[in-house]
Image (cartoon, rainbow, N blue to C red; front, side, top):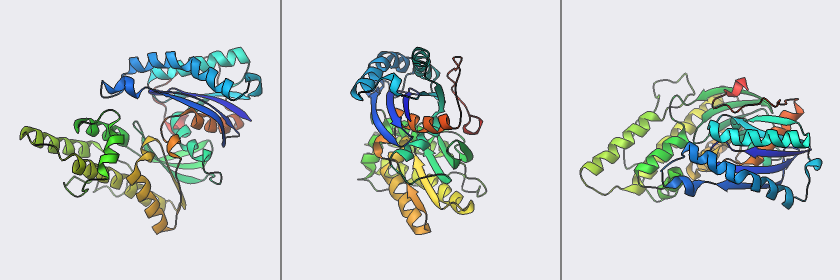
Length: 337
């Protein structure tokens, strides 16, 4: 079964064809990083306009390079939530047009579910149930994946997402957008114990939630202190310190949740799952505790349509369909989708 998929939830326009939820036939991503770099972050209106420019050529390229026709496909899957509404609307409306023109069924896909499904593309033996840490620019969740279309959130951020915190601090350290990527590279050469940062929610041992606003504020104060004294920022050490603090928070809650909930199979997904320290630490902790651990390939960590096609396949099998009144939605809880 071949699923044609579209992703446009933020600043990447992506199109893919996925077979049986596991095999990638073709995919393309058009990045907008250079368009938003000058602003230090994603500008929603600019993102929407770029999606409009990029989506039709990407669709044509993926179809033509795959030597397929729409009559060879079984369904069209599209990310409809959560994300930037203007960006989502471009993908949703284009997908609805394709569905009308081809007669193919339309399958709505939740963005976080798609990130989790990215794991299926490179881990052929991974099947639910398992516990997944989903970390990206807009989301930080601990999710029990009960089945391919059934999920339970047991922990989430109370304020900033981990990726958002990385990018904002990265900007203050002088890195181009996305700051988290540059910070990860600089952190490899720094001393992670150079500065003392607070431990988020350290007195709340009965929760698996995250909080990164306090860490972000503490880092801002340290950076402001150097700036007020006209001293050069120790960028390598600051990067390493902040990265270690965020990763410690993510890993400690995730491993504790796995122990408490008796999960033996763990996974990580989302844009921040490309973070080198997070990948190392999770693998180390999984090995120490006898857990089996899965990661997506780096190319599937950031937003892409392949993951939408993977999840779209399982949504299609479950009978999920969208009518032509499908609309983009900025926020939809994972369990309410």
